[in-house]
Amino acid sequence: MPGSGGSWRDAYKGMSSDNIKGLVLALSSSLFIGASFIVKKKGLKKAGASGLRAGSGGYSYLVEPLWWIGMITMIVGEIANFAAYAFAPAILVTPLGALSIIISAALAHIILREKLHTFGILGCVLCVVGSITIVLHAPQEREIDSVIEVWNLATEPAFVFYAASVVGLAFVLIVQFVPQYGQTHVMVYIGVCSLVGSLSVMSVKALGIALKLTFSGMNQLVYPQTWVFTLIVLTCVITQMNYLNKALDTFNTAVVSPIYYVMFTSLTILASVIMFKDWDRQTGTQIVTEICGFITILSGTFLLHKTKDMVDASNPGSSSGSLLLCLPKHIEDGKGFKQEGIPSRRQESAKSPRPLRHSKHGEEDGFDPEAVPLRHQEASRSSS
Image (cartoon, rainbow, N blue to C red; front, top):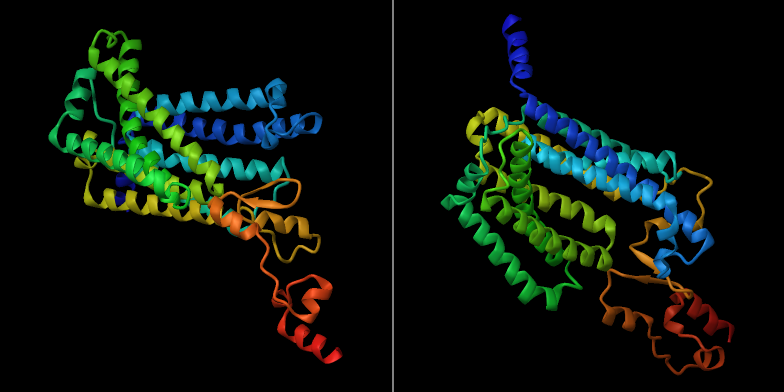
């Protein structure tokens, strides 16, 4: 089938050197970021063994070299991710961020002995398959010779409308919804992060292109547009990190991470399609294939997060302590567990004891008869 072989050769020839550089940088970023979580966690464990744990307000990890190695590894990964946007379109780079989740889960299974459920392994496979699908059908990076050209793309009516809508929605969420529903609805904080994050990626890409051109001999630092993009990056990243930290501090990480990944990646791809017109240079088949690859990654991400804390029921060595992994986010307070995802007023009502009804057994034994199963109450009455 010569026609089939020719199409495959054309596909491979069609992947530009810039896309390959962006792909390598994105994969390197996922590797460094995924490994950094494991190294930092080992550093936190080591520091907690000799001092006050970070979860209890301690800062002994700041003098732990292993924790700093993990932090430096994460910074290197973020720099590689930043550079990837300068070479490849966001529709290629952004979805590959899911690979850091796979690397982190695999290393946790091997190094930290944190069990990875069978369905979690399936989730990893789905993420890999989806990533390969997107890589093979990603659009070519647009040829840009000046930051002025990026500025012209950013000031076209379609993207101006998108940016204005994003800023308006984020402002409404921050002013109107965060004070009332921020502590009870996870979508409020994540909505702000995702909306602002899509603009931050576009600005990071513009700044990355400016730096790439500068290093190649065409100085872009003399243009005020470069510094405007830098200011937008700083503003968006600070806002994004602020509300992401609020979400992680309020709700379970297993809930925040997949929802944030879906919203952030979807809005980033939408922003890139509007600003850089990625899909204008592709056929309908390529676009549909990329969407299918993205949905495959989303399915794998949700499956991995849903099952990463599950304990295999067939494991005879599982104990009640391992079952705590299945609980929502909690912290130890010395008396029990406090669920951080529950509003404070509900926590207080949950902690307050139920009023005891005056009954013979309630007065003598000091417990609530309603808390005892019905058959035990009947047995108690018959024995009395």
